[in-house]
Amino acid sequence: DAKTTQPTSMDCAEGRAANLPCNHSTISGNEYVYWYRQIHSQGPQYIIHGLKNNETNEMASLIITEDRKSSTLILPHATLRDTAVYYCIVNSRSNFGNEKLTFGTGTRLTIIP
Amino acid sequence: NAGVTQTPKFRILKIGQSMTLQCTQDMNHNYMYWYRQDPGMGLKLIYYSVGAGITDKGEVPNGYNVSRSTTEDFPLRLELAAPSQTSVYFCATVDRGRSLYGYTFGSGTRLTVV
Image 1 (cartoon, one colour):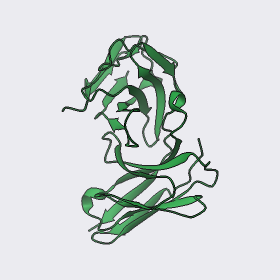
Image 2 (cartoon, one colour):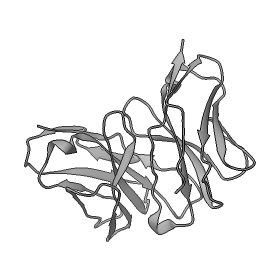
Image 3 (cartoon, one colour):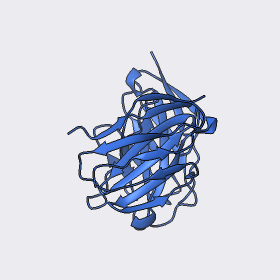
Image 4 (cartoon, chains in turn yellow, purple):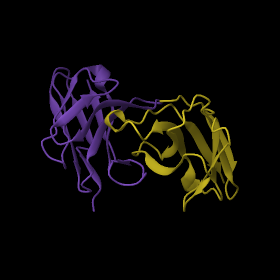
C-alpha cells in the first residue's frame, strides 16, 4: 500500500473550516484514500473515503487532486469536539485477502475556542 | 446493535502471566482485526481474520495468538506477558461483502504489564 505524509499538528479556530492535507504521491490506480479520526484514545472512527472524485458526507468533504497524489479533508465548521488525531490511509480494495489498514502517526488537530 | 465490544477495558498483568482479550461483534462482519497502539504512535496490526476458521499474521504478531471459531468472536491471547506488550489494544471489523464503508473499531483494552 502507498505511504502517506501528513503534518504532525494543526490548529483551527472554532467555527472555521479545518483543512487537513495528505500527500500520497505513490498511490496506485486501485487504491482508495480513507480518512479516520481518533478522539482521545477512543477507537478510530471512519470519516470518509474516495477514489478519484470529490466526496461529501455528513461529517466532512474529501478533495482529491486530479493526479491523485494528494488530498484534503475538510471539516466545514469545526467544533471543539473535532479535536482529534486524523489519519489519512490509502488502501487497495482489490486485494481482499491481504487487505489491512496501515496507520501512520496522523495529524493532531486542535480546535481553538 | 452493540457494534464491536471489547472486554476488559483495563487490565494490569504481571510479567509472565497470561490473559485473553475478548472481541465480539454483532454486525455479521466477516473480516476482523486486532491492532495495538503504543503511546503517541499509530496503530499496528497484530492479527487478522477473513472469516471463521481463518487467521493470519499482521505486522507485529510475536507474543500473541488468535482464534476465530465463530463469525462473532475474535479473541486475542497473550501467553507470557512482557512489559513491551503494555499498550492499548483495538479490535476492528469490516464487511467485505458490502460497498466501500470503513472499519468499525471497539473502544479498546488498556493493558499494563508490570
